Structure formats: C-alpha cells, structure tokens
Length: 406
Image (cartoon, rainbow, N blue to C red; front, side, top):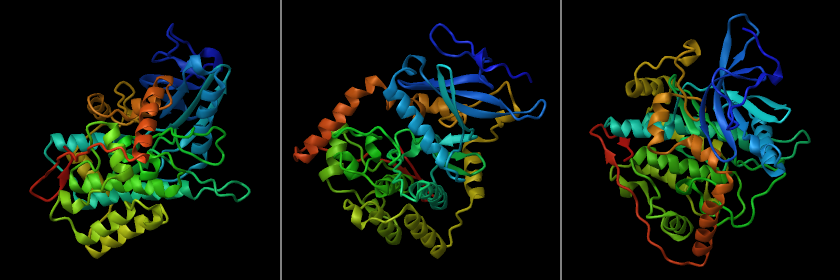
C-alpha cells in the first residue's frame, strides 16, 4: 500500500476530508461525526507489513480552530494526558501529529458499543443486565479510572487527574467482553495549562457529583461518585437523577435526597446497597478513597455471592444482543463505528438517543457556552437553595431479576 507524503491530504470545500483521502500516513475510511471543536474519523494506518493495515480512530481539530490558541491548547492537553495512560481498560492513544496547519491524534479502535447504546439495545429487546455483567463492567471501568488517578509526573508529583465525565457513553463494551473508558477530553490534571472558569460545569448532568454540580474543586472521588451512578442505573433499571430540566437535576444533586436503590427495587441486596451508597455519599470524605477501593469492595461482594466477573460472560451477553458483528478490521468495505470507533449498529441507536461522539465533541464548542451558562446558573440556584422539583424515571425489571433502563 502506497503511503502518500504528508501533504497529500485533500480537503473538501467545507474543510472536511473525504473517505479514501490521506492525512499524513493515515487513509480515511469515513467520518464518524463532527462537533464544535473537532471531527472524528475512522482511518487505516499502515503496519509496515505489505498489504496489512490497522483501523484507528482519528480525531482532528477543525481547520477553522487550528489557529486558535485556546482550542489548540485544549486539544493538545487531551492528547498529552491520554498519552500518559496505558491500561487494558482505557482506550490507548497511538500518535499525536502536528502537520502544517493540521492537528490530530489517533487512538485505539474498539470493536464494540458504548454502554448507553447497550442499555438502549437491551431495553428494546426486553432484556436486562445480570448483576454479574453489571459488576464486571463497572469493576473494569474502576480499574481504568484508578490507573488514571494514580498518574505522577517525572518528578513524582501527583497529577491529580480527574476524568470529570464518567458516564455510560464514555464506557465502551467490546464484543469480546473487554471494557474501555474513553474520552478524557475534559479531564483535569495539574499538567493542563487551561483552567475551568469558576461556576462553569462540565460533564453530563445526570452523572455529575454533588461537588461538580456546584462548581467546587474536584478530586478523584468525583469520578467514583459518577461511576456509582452508572452502577445504580445498571442494577436498578432506572436513571438515578432525572428531572424536568437540568436545573431540577442539579438542585437534586446539590441539596436533594440521593435515592437509594432499594427504593427502585425492593429486592435490592442490602450488602450491595451499602457499598453503592458509600460510593454515592454526598460528603466525599465518606466515599471510597480510591476507585480501586470501590472496585475491591464490589469484587469482594461478587466473591461472597459466587458471582463470576468474567469477560466471557459479558461477551456472551453482547452476542445475545448484537449477534455476530464482523470485525471491520477484516472487512475494508463494511466499516462500523461508535464513540471509540465501535459498532455502526450502536451508533445508529445513539443517533436517536445519546450520541457520545456529539456530546464529547460539542462539549468544547463555542455554541456550548449557553449550556455551560445554564449549568452555572443552576449551580448558583442550588447554592442559594432555590427549590425546584425533581423526579426519577421509571424502569423495568424482567422475570430473571435483571434490569433494563427505560
């Protein structure tokens, strides 16, 4: 396969690259999506072996922003932070490239679907998550987060990395049962030169920690709370926070009662509830001190109840939902994708629901300022104890005792 020179990237009138064209040594297969700061492509990279290439996800800053120092800094910071992370449960960054006016990075291709898409698929099929599958996914995500939280600089300084957007759309479940945490685009670390302005809230409202909701300083325990919200959703079949608008959700996070899982499911195991509610403590000092401690508590629970947390079980569950999904790495003409370049089937579902791609790309868009202002106002309203109502969405539990989110 001929690899063109770096200048062989052909750009359309709109500034986007077309399938089949080249960006440096990468041949673009298709554009997955575009947001306010960047666009994401599925691309092929040569392996150095004649006739063989590998699929990667390629994230490219929009051409009109490539001269904007603030956006370039944010984009480079995401790549810089991602480059530090090498863990089986985190999507791996391969390469960061600054090529003339082009700025992009490539990351691991994951053949699977994000957890939000899986939840939607399960609900539409009338199926739910077995407890063992839910615990398997969450413990693996916790392992990935712990790795990020533990990162230190070359001088040994704690980098204090916080993902800040732990949610189902940023947890990818591969068809082989493996689990990857993705999108550290708004993660915070001491190495990051830009800072979040006071009162600005970043992340998906329904998965914010209480301290995140009011714009307070964050540490790794914020991610633990958000991951616990994901576990609540997987094990009850209901959203933990669901209000008539973002104001209602933020107020509930800041001042309302945190719903107990046993209120959603009368058969919820008390031991598991204690573990979950500790991770969901409004006071972060009462939460698990690390994602690893949360992981260990869940693994101890699984062992006590003879639950197998195997990737094989998750793989069988995914096969039951999706059937045999050909790996596009071996089918050049039939490429599927998701937020981390996962399945087209899952992406089609997200088009009508929660697109993790559009959410992650649009978070830093100029047009997102209105949404951040909304959350800032909501946080201010919460801090001033302005009362607004909130309600919890209803879910359903199938006959086997597994939950599917409605």
